[in-house]
Image (cartoon, rainbow, N blue to C red; front, side, top):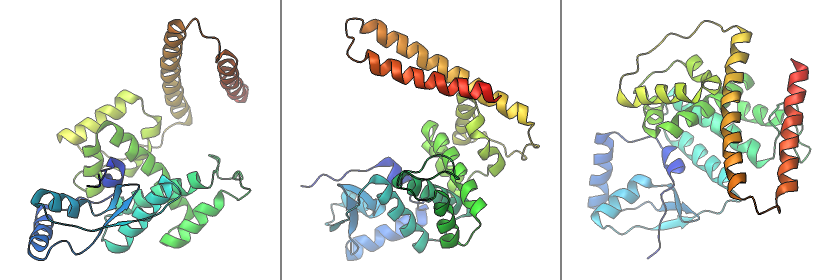
Length: 270
């Protein structure tokens, strides 16, 4: 029998059915069978997680159909467009989908991080936000804000998938400005926020007052110091354990040198 894979990221993209809706779907499948095929890509479900769960639990036969995509990002975009076209989504879910769609498109086309730069294939990165803004009937700035929002929600999901699910479902309301500040938070602060949402102790906060640019930069530097210290410690530990091998030394030195050059460039800019 073919082994079907449940990919947690793909599954998390699908809005969770409430108990009543799931029960109606289960009742329908028990009475009429699974009439809609489960869609797969590389043996991973990209549409039909609930149908698969019901059929597996009750040993009901089901059909599958395979989709062909060139990358994981293309599969993500297919899931997003399929969900947007068939469901009534909350504003937060729509923002997340738009942001994820934007990030997946940029990855596929090899875009650099800055919107005013050119992609590796010579296409303007700004074309992505323009195309998606037109597709979703929103402004270009909304697409960029949604991209940051999706990154923040994914950062929360790395700590607690349940916290992310609660935000997307509307079970917990977190101000979008607070979510937008997550990339500048320390790891411990993100963990505290995510766990308070999961445990039900989170209290809705007002959007913070506009931050002083110096405070924002200071917060980013604090994160940089912490992450750099962690990476340095891990690197020293790895080098001490592999003192006899010099095969990778030139490449390692080049990589470190490039980071030093970037830091020096940043230092000169301040």
